[in-house]
Length: 101
Image 1 (cartoon, rainbow, N blue to C red):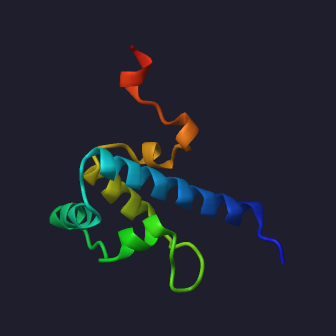
Image 2: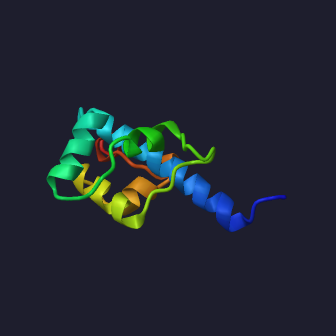
Image 3: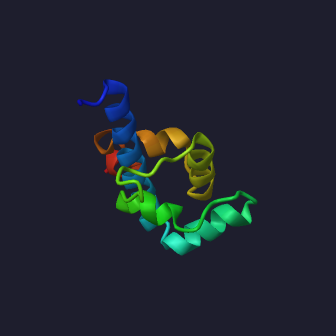
């Protein structure tokens, strides 16, 4: 049975967010453990292992792990960026340093 367009769009947004979280985390020199600790230090109930499952695209049910809007906001705060930046496809992600040579 084919997936609905809504489902496939949600999956692609999860992959985009995972890619951008990984990229931003690397820019800041944060490990997965360090980012998770930062989210938890802000008082959010962020499950250990969620970031690993998200970035690796692994879910115990066989599909991509789900990420709530709250979790997206918590991660964006810890990564010092806006939630919209984490959802922006890589081709649309801009580096201001590269725009002004």
